[in-house]
Length: 165
Picture 1 (spheres, rainbow, N blue to C red):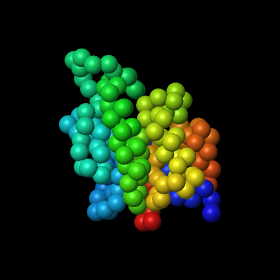
Picture 2 (cartoon, rainbow, N blue to C red):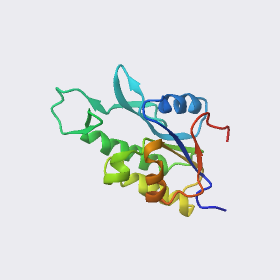
Picture 3 (cartoon, one colour):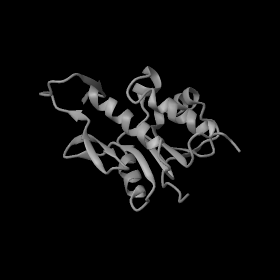
Picture 4 (cartoon, helix red, strand yellow):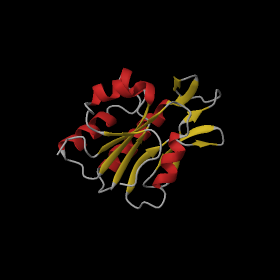
């Protein structure tokens, strides 16, 4: 069996409703965990898929804490720690699907953001330590770099309708 046969990548250009599509796809599935970053009232938020809880992620200019700027938007630095905790906790559960939204420039090029959680989780899936399936949401302009960084050759890549698997 290919070590990446249980790893799926959903990849399209930025701002093409990838998160919303995966959110709709995941509804009604019982053993789904990880995180999505939906837009709620104009701000990107962290959605813990297992708990159903929403946490602050994107912040406005008046936010007093430490910020990280991504594509001109401000994010609370502490939110990345929360996101990693959500991912690591989800990886410890017996899930059918573990979803990571999004593996982007911070993770792939700078080793920050959701790192090192993404690398640990991908490696655990590749080695068989985690059962179920992993779904990574990756912008299409970073797909080749992500495949190289995480050794994802042979994984299943989708850009439109996510198949029933």
